[in-house]
Length: 168
Image 1: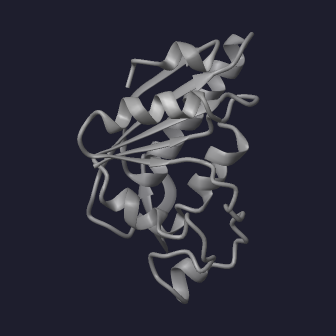
Image 2: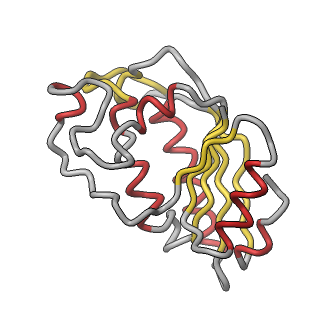
């Protein structure tokens, strides 16, 4: 399965959704207005291991990551990071990890809950992004990849969401 997490609004999101559903094996995560922020309660680690205790459409993000061969983020670039919705979805993906620690790349990181690896791609958009913002966003994607034990497939930047059409 390929997992697409995006912050596009209709009609842009509809075109992107059609592009993905025309291909086999895509699962699309978009903002349906119900996402709740991670509260940092550690419930996904101790009370309901592997699943967020907040019951909404995003409580199974850990399981979805464990079933994905590729995760594609499509987001507005906000000061060198993804926009609030995409960042919130990734925060809600914490159940993919164990609360215990291990050393990766000579740094301390959470142990992986699943013996699974996926590829991560990030497609950012935003007018007038500076070189520093793009560098920071690229560094952020690589740091997320280390945290989730995955590999970075690509990080790309465009000025408008329309320029992302057809590159999935």
